[in-house]
Amino acid sequence: MALISVSNNALQNITAVPASIPTGALILIKSITASASASISFVDGTDGVVLDSTYSSYIFKFINCHPASNNINFQFNLSTDSGSNYNVTKTSTFFMAGHAEADNDSYLEYISSYDLAQSTAYQPLAYTLGNASDENLSGSMQLFNPASTTYVKHFITNTNQNANSSNALNTYVAGYGNTTSAVNAVQFRMSSGNIDDGIIKLYGVK
Image (cartoon, rainbow, N blue to C red; front, side):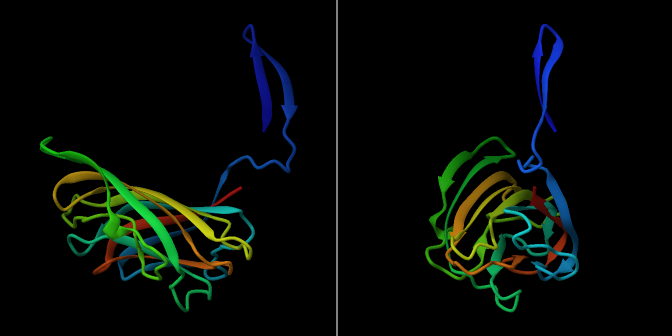
């Protein structure tokens, strides 16, 4: 990569950026396709998954995740013991914007019942997700420095979904896993029933 300036339609000052400076490239690590799956887990060192100090942050992409059950939420949890237990203590906040297909309702609200306060429960990432044939969820989650043994583990998510009420819901969730142990596994699942279909991709941020 190079830094390039333009003056009078001419390229000037082409300077190479040192390799030590991150470029922000996404490196695909693992892609998992759901098929009536109870959960999808990414465990460091298993099936090609890297979730360690190789990258300072990781991004999960959710693509057309469709639930088998209606009126449920998509959720996740963290593990510090390679997936033996998904029970990291978390504190978080959850809010969303919504708009009805009929154009008769719109809203922006904080959902206190979906946030966590020092809880080991699974963190909801969606609200009243529908399971009709055209309803699904897509979005992303960024997890920062999961291998740290000094700091808590911050996460930020943004998803868009078709709610069971035929609303477009854009949800925002942020928080932290309150542990100084290295997080080495992440699991996603529906609050009830299977992930009927969909893809989750894991990227390292270079």
